Amino acid sequence: MGNRKTISRRSLLTGSAIAAGLALVRTATGQWVNALVPEKIPLDPTKQLGAPQGKMGTRSTFEKLEKIPSDTSSRTPLHLLQGTITPSDLHFERNHGGVPAIDPNQYRLLIHGMVDKPKVFTLEDLKRLPSFSRIAFLECSGNFRTGKEELTPQQICGLTSQSEWSGVLLSTLFREVGIRPGASWFLAEGSDAAVMTRSIPMEKALKDGILALGQNGEALRPEQGYPARLFLPGWEGNTSVKWIRRIEVSDQPFMTREETSRYTEKVNGKIRQFSFDMDARSIITFPTYPVSIEKGWIEIRGIAWSGRGKVIRVDISTDAGKKWQPAMLQEPVLDKAHAYFRYFWKWDGNSTEIASRVLDETGYLQPTIGQLINARGKDMGGYHLNPITFWQVKKDGRILLRPQNWK
Ligand SMILES: Nc1nc2c(c(=O)[nH]1)N[C@H]1C(S)=C(S)[C@@H](COP(=O)(O)O)O[C@H]1N2
Ligand SMILES: [Mo]
Image (cartoon, rainbow, N blue to C red; front, side, top):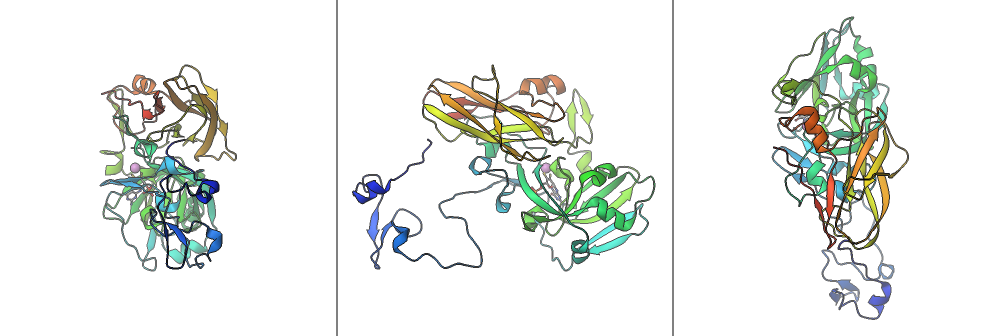
């Protein structure tokens, strides 16, 4: 499948390895190594003592995993990952004013406004509070690209990633300061050059909001908000304010730039405000551009998620959306988290289209682009777009995106 080539031990022993494209050279120490690889790799690892153990593990140099950076964001290589946890160094980034450098010893979080005891917390103060962890996805509401056939899942929707987030529940934090009666919103302010601010309903904060300090077992990465960020499971990424330095409790929203001129979308000519929930979405991550397939059994794989709860079912179509069959879901399926799906398909060599669609526990079924246009109008803008992604399977085995243009 694809361009993966395997070299059997037998072919190496019979010397046909040269014909298979290997360039073997003998080193001064008598090891046969492949001169085409970046490092000198012995042909037989059992004949040489391995490298010493170090202070840090490293990714194999054969694994080329990279984000795609642009001026404002960088995208997770969804089609090159296995399972549902995004390695922290591959978590997507969306920065409005770059990644600030913050000394954890200088870090302070101020909580004030409609509270009984306004308070400044140091990082140590925060770490001493009762802690909490959960696995959840984080997705930017601008997570949609289309327009040409040569796009990978990373380019189409690489602005979603998943981590185990740990820190302090906002409900715990607010108990420390005492919320006054009537308080219903708070302002979250970041300490980056953009000083990003969002108004957050107190109800969401008390339900499952987290002040995150950790990501996949260690402190947050600087790109993810070190040393502390807001994390609101299932909500548009923009509300999860990074490098958070101030929380001001109030009885109304603050109407910041990020919820007026940005992060609002048009629905049938009207501006929709505070569209917090991320709608259910799925994407096939294999086989997709740029891989090619051969006739026979293919395991179609991918991820599905919903900001409103659990994934109930993922359907696969291998006939361009006429018929749908349920895929297998990898357990455990978690609330507001990427779920992994698999589906066996025997490709007969004819051209067709494959696609996935997700059903979440609220009964919401992932729409087609046509259904989105019908519901919102052609002028719907670029946020919260979650249409079914169709992949064209060409007779020669190439897989290409079916572009979905509507303007
Ligand atoms: N302070 C601050 N918080 C921020 C942002 C920012 O630029 N500054 N970007 C927001 C946006 S638009 C998104 S989608 C998420 C991205 O989080 P990540 O970079 O950890 O993936 O952070 C949000 N929080
Ligand atoms: Mo975003």
